Length: 292
Length: 231
Image (tube, rainbow over all chains, first blue to last red; front, top):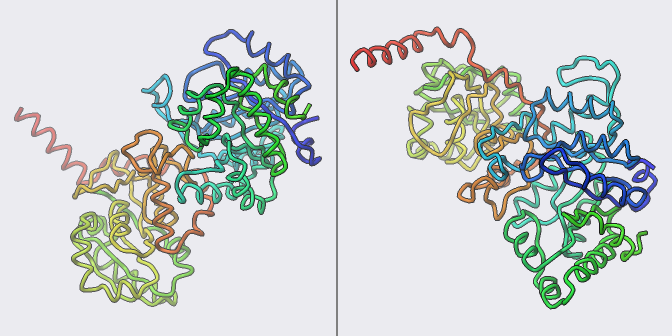
């Protein structure tokens, strides 16, 4: 079932993501694809994640389509102007890709090509709006398309922020993204059910499916690193302690992830697992969370 | 020198839709020489606004709106008129609108678009920056320019990368959109956050051919070449 149909049917969906490598070697991604096939409702392919240059999301999504998976084409606004973005969207459509997730994209100075010129010709709300125009058969300049696109568009939201301004901006922008054509949301990684509950109490009014983001913890160091460096991620101390005391960190990380999914799943319509190197363990996590 | 041109009156009227009382500010610096915000233009605007049913609580022209200290001292005697107004209409460049917004706790509306001369120079150096985009958005963003205050120049809101109100690009820099949020909150205009800003017409930012042949431009060219001659 396509991601769109799965979400529209009201089913609890599971998505995950893969990050292409730097280079032309696709063996790892293909291996992961084989393992995930039939186990998840969608596989995001990240777009030059953290502004680090790699194999593209478009090509990788196309490989996933050929393998019979349901890819979600992540598109950032950082690297392409409106001509390239629209052209890549047309290319994605003819390659059988039907889901797009729109994000602003980390600034180039955070990645491995710090001298690159940032683009942001369109921002994420404008790109969502553009895709909607293309679905309606028109490009951004108002020209008619010879064959329109048919994309199911998603966007991202950060349920937890460290300032009131940021929290309020996230909600205002969520509404703006929906009005521009976003039909589902993936969130930044969540580690506290009560915090997510507070967010969903306010986000529920928008009546769009939200897939809660989950990142499996692998170590105490990883938790501390994310707390310090990743905007919108807050791993609470008791969880870090629990991880620290565990003898088998991998088993503990998987257990915490499954527990989190169970604590969160009744508040939203799906989970988006960002495994970051643990992609092959996703089926195991799903089994532990009794979702498979 | 920043060149500006007045926005169409219908656009200004749109900005002022919910406002009954307006204070008009002009600038005797660049806007005066651009003939967009000098005394004659301020008086003409007053008539237009009154014709459209607005009450103009007051108006004044300040030598350089880009100098915030001057803005504060010149507005002090007019405080009652300024505070009676629902908002301020500022006839000047993007720098001037931002510096007024920074000094007055009221919504500010840009009455002009700043036109590119191929690079910006303010007469007084402050924190406000203008990109001379030719399509001023300051009405929607509380008088803080999203193109210059946000590292990514996003028009519709924050990227989500900020930590503790600081930009992901540089921890010394505040998140421009959090500043915009705080300002909109202060002036009671948070509803503007929901306004979708369509894709920008970057074409308006390119200097127009006639801009390269004004007497001012010619004068600058001559000065530079005569300096070279001396060198």
